[in-house]
Length: 150
Image (tube, rainbow, N blue to C red; front, side, top):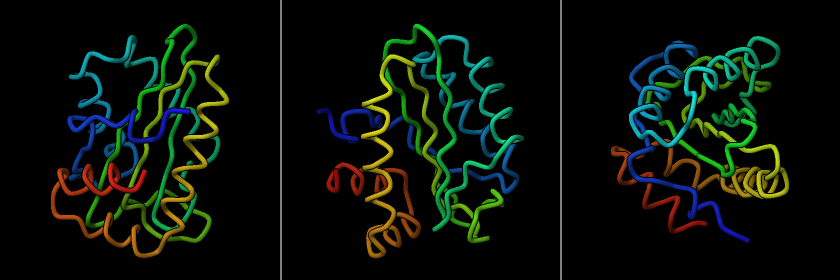
């Protein structure tokens, strides 16, 4: 089973400057588009926004996991956004979001996707690790922390 680290790319660890949820997600999507790894990035972004309007993907503890399925994509793509100030994601516990795991997934890879969600859940429930991630000064630090705790 591939670990979370196998899906991480240093160029898709993003420092977010926006405080508004939609603007923050757009900032992340701009980086994803630059990578040319995602076909129809605009369609994916529309799916993400549609989901957010239905129900927030902010899961609490300062984490959000916006995600959407792309038919025929054939893989999983993860971008990680970091906000030192925090973003209002309407989380169940009311905390601002400091870390966003933006995930694009092929419908055929549902099992792997669930394993990734499980790993993210484990990471963020670790108080010490979560604090390290939130207080990271650079995207390099975040990348290193995530690689070393897969």
